Image (cartoon, rainbow, N blue to C red):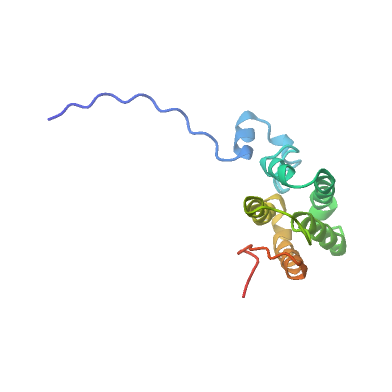
Length: 153
């Protein structure tokens, strides 16, 4: 019988999300005001950094402005008009999926991934509305975006 050598102690598992890391470090306040609001990414989130490398600076500023509208307390609590929310979602969709762009295949794929992962930034109540707005933008666009989650034949 072969004798086993003792294992070295394992390193603790890394947190899977920035929210979990923040919660462990006691910094959850930077993500939410109360436990009942959706988790909001901090200003320099991974998604926003990735979007900033793809989008022009002016478009990125507009996208951040629209995200603030969507994250506002009025929008989350349902007091804001649905028209304002729809307009903000449409503006976000147009920022991510412009009518014309000169992306190479790698940039086009990044744009599609950003669009697919955008709903994670939104409250759950707005995610279906986001899908509708993106579908309309894709249909109206001259570009052929290949975003499987939004294209239903």
